Image (cartoon, rainbow, N blue to C red; front, side):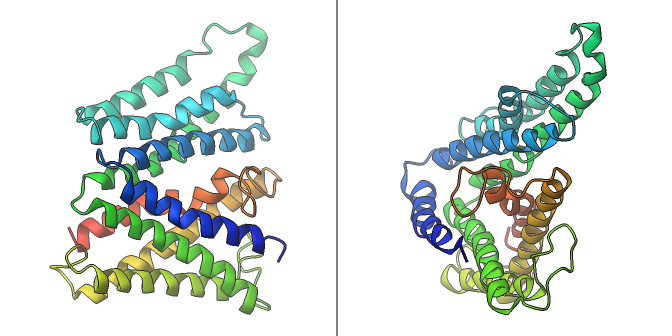
Length: 284
C-alpha cells in the first residue's frame, strides 16, 4: 500500500501527458512521441546494463544509451523524415560493428572481459529499443494517433487492474510464478479483463479505426485485448526474472511508486510488436 499514492499521482499526471504528446503536439508522423520513445529506450538500456553489470557483463552507461537508442532513432529517421527503411538495418550493422571491434585494441590483461562486454552490448542493443521501435512504426498507419493511444491505454489498463485486483483478491493465489511471487492469478485475470474491455471500447467508440474485415469487430477487439494483455504481463514477468537474477528489486528509482524506466516500459516493450501484428492482421 505504500506505493498507492505515488502510483496514483503518476497515473493522474501520466495519462494526460501521454494524450498531449501523442494527440496534441504538432505531428510529423508522431515525432514528439517518437523522440520520447528514443529517450525511454536509451534510459531503459542504461538500467538494463546496470543489471547485466551485476553478472560481470559490463559496458559503460554512455555506450548502453547509444546502443539502446539506435533502433528507435533509425525507425524515427525512416518514419518521420522519410529515409529509406534500410537505415534501420544500417543502424544494426553500425551498432554490431562497434560491439565487435571497439575492444580489439584493449590491453592484454583486459581480454577476459571482452566476451561479457560484447554480450552486454548486443543485449542492450536489442532490449528494450528493438521492441519499443514498433510503437514508432505504428505512426505510419492510418489513424495512428488513436492506434497508439489505444495500445498504451490497453497496456496501462492491464497493468493497473492487475495491480488493483491483486491487492484486493490476490491473497491465497500468489506465488505461482517464481520469478515474481507477488503476482497473483486474480491480478492476471483482472488485467486481462481490463485489456479486453479497452479493446471492445475502442471498437464501439472508434468504428472507423477498429473495423475488422475478417471477424466481427467486437470479437477482433476482444482478441487484440486478450493477446496484448497476455504479452504485456509476460513482458513484466520477463523483466522480473532478470531483476531476480541480478538480486535487485527495481531497475532504478527515477519514477516514484514504480521504480526505474525499465520497470515502467517492460510491459509496453514486449507488447508493442505483438499489438502491431494483431492490429495489422485483424483491422489492417
